[in-house]
Image (cartoon, rainbow, N blue to C red; front, side, top):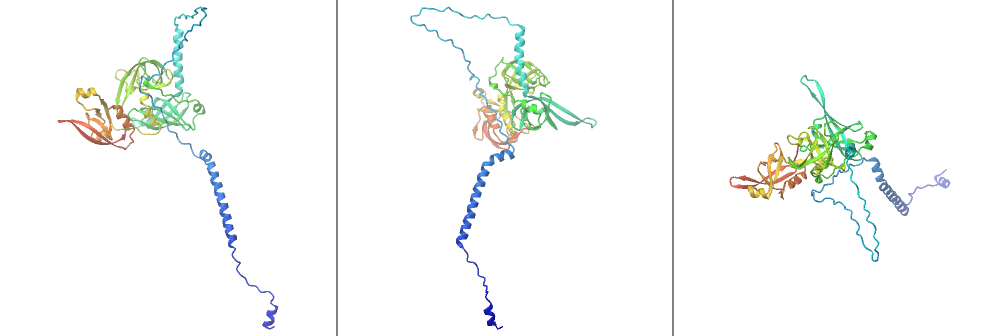
Length: 435
């Protein structure tokens, strides 16, 4: 068969052509896909926004809240006025001559019996028993070796005061000397339960230490019933006030003593600070610790026998709690207490006139190995300004130093006496931490 005849029988002929592009359809598809993407994104964003608080609270651990202690009014004259009952004035009604008989009820005083004294004592001790719910026994255990190279353990004991309870921990205030160099720290609650504790911060000047006791793993009965102590206003304490000593004023914990404030005018000068010391007629132990309470059960003094004067070791003394609140707050918030290393006093106008000293803060002594010593400050210098801020009183000096951060550079202007009188000198110190 010829080629011509073959072409006649070839009734199927194919030729593949490219399909024409439908631009309108592609544009519609792109717009549709983009629209679905936008809808999905908006929906996902809205859902995440609504669920974020729930997921955050469920997955993340709660953040620690700052522990804040309200400051007290230092003016003792602003006392709460007592309300006096006033008898209503009698008015005469015109035209009425009727007089009612004067019926006054006269209370006949009765003699006090011994039972009345016992009842008063019971009420005082009830305040102490309630306050003991905020008291724990702090134990610091450390290892040592004797002359024969045999290892042994020693334990320091003192009372601790629960000052705060948040969702994660208990904050316990105690004395640093009890847990100095301790390898393990524990607290024992009133019901005998024992829990491990960790040192947060301590002040090398006052010796106050703050411990942390995690609530997790704590005995459920203790966690529910333990309560934080209430810090009162010690600026209202007056000579003759009745106070209650709790903690371990006799050396054994949960003992309760009662007595009176005998003096509020004593003060102790420490490094960069000065504190009011309350003396009492309460006979305690020279190693006693704890707190002084007012009749409302509020802590007004921190028993620290290290600050008692010679001859008063057997009577309880306490530091004014109002003057310690800023230190306690900073330690509880895991902040260090800065220091320069000076013991100072105020140069009053009378001292200025009688002794010829310039107004300012007189340096009584400079601590060894302190930032102040490294800066070249000396005994007898008078500080007149710190970082261009005028310093005229010890209170101003204390407040300024406490606001400093560790490592901060401090420009101190002093007046130093020489052969030709006083000369102004500028020194620079670096705020440190007293260990």
